[in-house]
Length: 157
Image 1: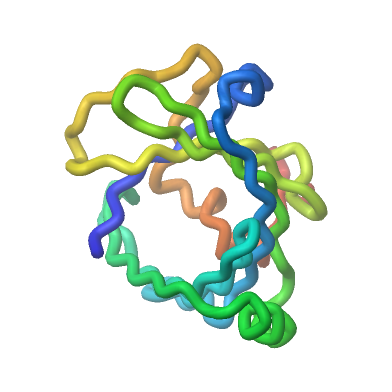
Image 2: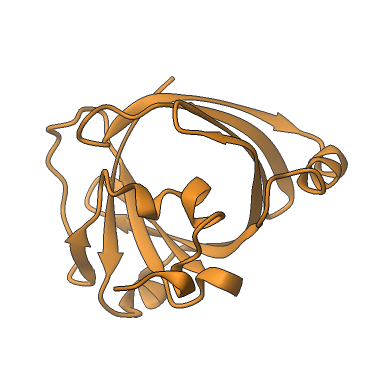
């Protein structure tokens, strides 16, 4: 139930040609308290409720609990989520023995593309594809729960 992941900006669209899977995602948050978030997600033909705890100081590790729920229930729950919903396409790309999940955002977050990799330990080595850019692990602005409140298009970079 511990999630260990690192997050990176993406430099080019090369990941699209390397992806073996592409899935549309819509998600919202019932709760975005900094110590816990409750997310509702429809991912392709399935739906999930996820609870995430507070991250460690580096932003790499936190408690995550997830359960599949009926899509109809998820659609109803999305209607009572905090503003605003996150819409994105997720591309899954194999790199060595790992999989990068590359999220291309739409709507208020259009223009943002972030890649995540889940690891078994915080110090685990992994192969970085050439299209991986700056690491943003631990930068809370890139948490989906905060992107729903302060969208990418409103950032002052």
